Amino acid sequence: MLYEQQDILGMEYGRRRQVKRNRRAGVEAETSGKLEIVDLSGMCLDALPKPPMNLANICKLDLSNNNLQNIPESLTARLLNVVTLDVRSNQLKTLPNSIGCLSKLKVLNVSGNLLHSLPRTIENCRSLEEINANFNKLTQLPDTIGFELLNLRKLSINSNKIILLPHSISHLTNLQTLDARLNCLRSLPDDLENLVNLKILNVSQNFQYLTTLPYSIGLLMSLVELDVSYNKITRLPESMGCLKKLQKLSVEGNSLVSPPMDVIEQGLQAVKGYLCGKINGTHKSSSKKNSWLGKLARCGTFNGRNIPIDDREEYMMANYRSFDSSASPGYLTMFSPRRLFSPKSYSSR
Image (cartoon, rainbow, N blue to C red; front, side, top):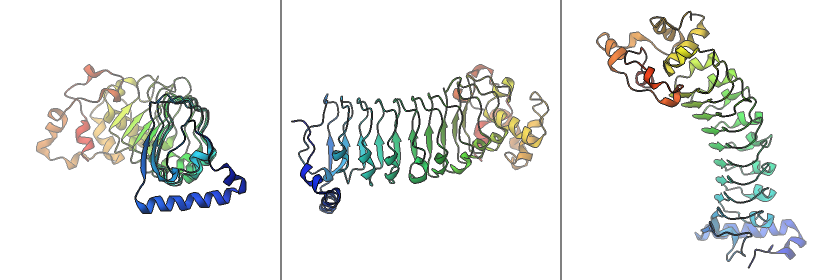
């Protein structure tokens, strides 16, 4: 039997009465310990069947891999205890505005649909920790999304048509992963430095659209992985020389002139050393490797005096290990065992 809107009569008497009834049901379900997981995935559903239980008893609802074209407003309004909602791989063009009623929702997966936008009410889901909206037709995010979702840790919006990220995104101080690859991004917000916990940033494959990176990208002091590959970037911000925790950098597919290609081919440490030198005004030639020690010391990213005299030769030669291919344009054969800077030595600090 297809899902039909329930309690229509109750809704006619007034929304407040309905909300109060749902809240009471949610409290009863929680206190009785009878929260349920409902899995209706992969059943080729065109519409939802009539639920056999109180919707307030559901803590996880999986509707993925069906043919759903809409989700009734009255259904989401009653999922008062749902923590995980998975509706990926359907035919959804919109999400119900009542999704804002899900105050306990932590994980929302709407990937693989036909969504052009997310409802503004999503900002009311203040418990959200993860949003996956990959593979849709999104052109933008709600302007105020970052002001309220302060618990958000992972935002995945790759493979859409997003042109700009809202400036409110810089308020997501708990965000650890931002995946915005394969979009139409023309720029990034200027005040990224507020993302103090961001560890992974991927804005690759925006192709001809993304031509510059903001200076603030070098102020992401928790950043471990940065992928800006396959864009139209010609210069990396000099501030990136200060990214002490950065372990993986992908820049292939750009037409970089700063740093030049011969520096990029030497790997991450050489890139950071070059940018540090630009900040300090000490860089003259990327081919003079002996100058890198002084530049890194002045920038505070390296101090050769901390290395015992007996170990300095080992640091420069024997302590070499292969560099991640995604951190350079793929010229692995050009990494020499006699390279001056070792990722292992850097990351151990």
